[in-house]
Length: 298
Image (tube, rainbow, N blue to C red; front, side, top):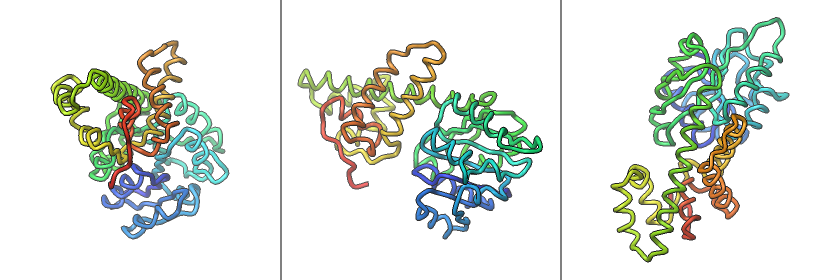
């Protein structure tokens, strides 16, 4: 079993770290809000007062954080993990930050090292939501060398199924491709329902029809939320907004103007600014329709 540091115990990070503890790894955890470490400590993890202390003796360090700026602070900041990582350690960045941030991180990470002992970096964002994180059934898209992945495979397999998708940054790129499609699908569903509303069509009839359309899987997953006007967060809308902004930014760097991605971003911007940021990202459907949306009782 490996000595693992896990930094970032949000909605996804906490259950992912719990999977590592259950698998028998020696896990040190850190979170900005320290109370979030308590349940993991009760299960056998050790709480650290800073990212540096979590990572000091680790063979593998995992970060699962909200934004590129937070990732840089936790890894490269004054109390970050980079200066204390032992030679031969592997850093696995599992947040959704985009390929540009990963390439930049790799360059800056080893600039902090002395003696030429480089740290190996994998970008390994995940596909799945809280239930999959709890069950250890995430799909993990890994960018980096296959040799580095082989060294960390058992750690990643405690959280899901790792799939090597290419060199450094490729995992981050695949995740943005997926999230661009998710944002577009949810925006399309919202606009389709808004069109039906404008024609006075019954909501159940609309949802029945859409459930047998190419949007069917999305409708099936989110129908209860849409019908009940309750959106407990599995993937917060504020994070979806951040991800769609990354999609647009990365596309523009590549010389692409993605019209659908821009439209989806506009809807997510509007929904977040209307106060839906802490709800599930599917609450953008309510924003588009002008319908109520709440957290519900979840």
